[in-house]
Length: 204
Image 1 (cartoon, one colour):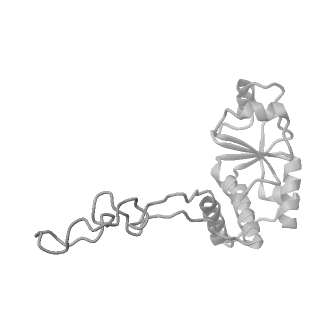
Image 2: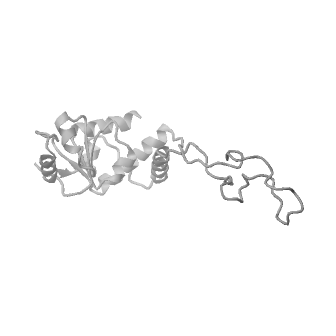
């Protein structure tokens, strides 16, 4: 059976409260930026003139050579010297409150539902561990290239069949985040996942 578009009325019947106004746009932006910033390694590192492994001796005497005076070989103006104001290891993560994350998640889900990008399926699971069979099963529900599939859980066959398909992501309704809701063309969701989404939005 092919998937059906989850309408706003059906979402409200499933106890999913939609945001009808522009509220939450900034919250969604802030949360997505924070998620991406947290993934940055922040490992870029350069050596200053104090870190360069060079002699501290004066390269030539102060006067009498006709050359500009120089105090050390690790000067930043020389090749092989230190770097001025270069990057150092740092933490890029940003703090976001639970209320902000909840609002961002609600906003992202609301916008995808209003756009008609959320599809409901009775159940979703692979009967055999074959990528070809998984793709054929997925095409029965949607022709979209990038698909997010939400359920309460997935069996081993489904996980193994989908792991080689990069544009497809399997996620549970309790662990999916706002960024993932925005990153895919279509979202397939099972009835149990809808219940968990409503529970999550009311609990957090």
